Length: 202
Image (cartoon, rainbow, N blue to C red; front, side):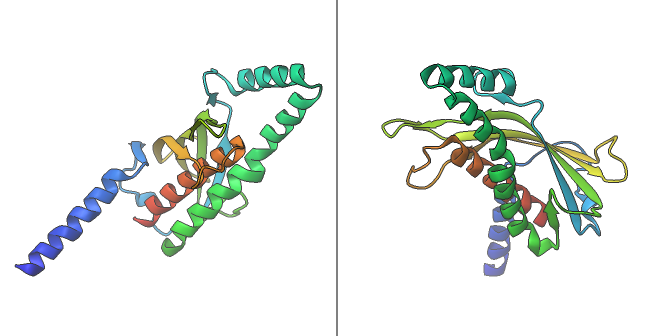
């Protein structure tokens, strides 16, 4: 009887863990059979469809921010834009890749933007960026939403599976995340952690 109860607890725990995953299936192979025999997954990030905060496009957000900051101090907006653009490769990508590989290594997977000869390619389309804020007396975590398309690298015309992750939160313990790039970086780290665990659970 005790053995049956233990099995039931394990099964319920696994079901709960799957149900709580932020990775939501949309279409294609729902069995993750595309991972069979795969050792490498190349990664591409696509920001072209991203909404930012209340803005319909990233360009609208950036243009308003640059204008606003340059009015306060000449050149301040331009410096902000440079930082905004470089944070994608300097912060977001490394955060994502570190955590996805940490979680997926037990499945023997190598995943990243610099991975070559990969059997699969994963395209992460960022659909929403919410930078959040932290002004000491008031704060809101960042969050990022993604569409994840998995392709056979030899055929990038049709994904073998599509998933989405919505409102992946980002913030640091203790609330010392006054910079938007830190908060958003933690969203990408969380996304990597979730996806790595999802692939490792094949």
